[in-house]
Length: 174
Image (tube, rainbow, N blue to C red; front, side, top):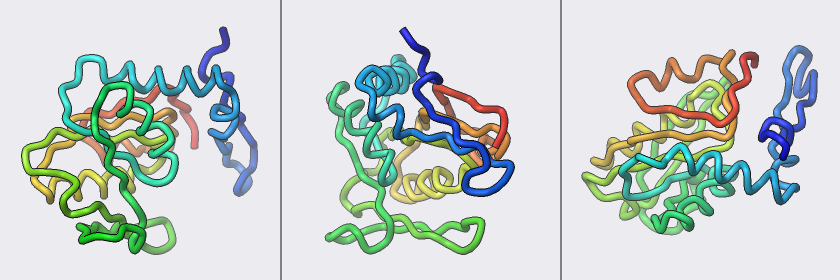
């Protein structure tokens, strides 16, 4: 059987010279790759006590929903501002060139709940840091953040210091 890394397509010099783009679509388009990816992330949660799974759009949905389903946990979507129809709680954060705002329905998370965040990639950690702040502002606790891939060269773990972070594949570069 192939290793999980074997399903990831690496594209040099995209979107700019010196960057290696790690393409998750090649994992998704292969049934064995998708199965291995979901199982690898789910295995990170084996001894974790949590109440719900949270995932940012869109790839956090792809990996978070099957894990929530398998473990019989609710799934809470984190969306870009303006995409949720009911009352929301939001958090803005800085991007490399500008700002972004994420939202969760105000009634999606209750104080005291234990949350797991699942996403495809941790790069700089900015999005996950904003999600953690949002979850904590709602009175809940993030007990673990799980990723399919991590770009360690971007030092996202520094922003998430003090939190339990795990990745199935760790690439040393950017």
